[in-house]
Image (cartoon, rainbow, N blue to C red; front, side):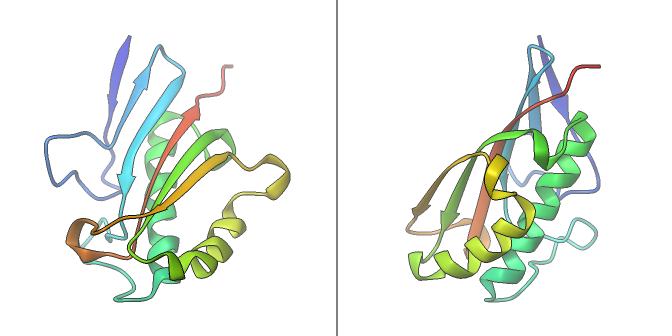
Length: 131
């Protein structure tokens, strides 16, 4: 079973992909989110990785909500940074949203370039809670 998740509370896809897919009714695979304001499509935070991380996580939260999940249901994240020197600033914002004792598994890598030349992109996998 495969269900497409779409919400106007997060930026619309800018290519041939969906915001998220729920597989087997429980696993949510959320596409990488960059710091776009869903209302305007503008990049949030200019060159400030902290503000950009905050917006990317806000976009993740909106998509997870549309799928029936929250950040507390996330089991894995992948963080892509344009510059690994931004790790500490990104991590400080990230830590405000994921409690250390129950934080998901995570990978964080530096990449050559991100869409729209943003500083950060974050994707996640979550488990939708069962009633």
